[in-house]
Length: 123
Image (cartoon, rainbow, N blue to C red; front, side):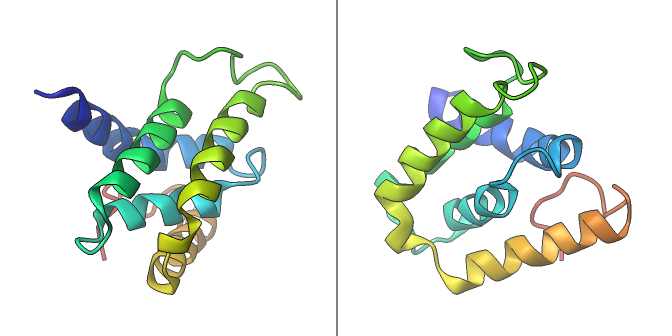
């Protein structure tokens, strides 16, 4: 499997779980989910998808430069990587991506984690 495909699979498998675990601690959860939905849009250019998948993979990775459990610092590196990516491609984030992210966050918040599993593309 190519590295790009491995990163896409890691993001698909780990993003919802990471958002659930960090909800309330990570101020960019909505943007992270919006970025994911942007990567799933067939109209999104490959370059934009690659940038976003890379940033989301870094966020989802269990090992990073500053461990996430360190209070006050843990998500700083994740946020820096994500915001750099987000700002470079933000023109490609559509209202439909944001709406899908908000809907998913509402289900996560409203069901205490029982929101149709980890399938990001579930209706």
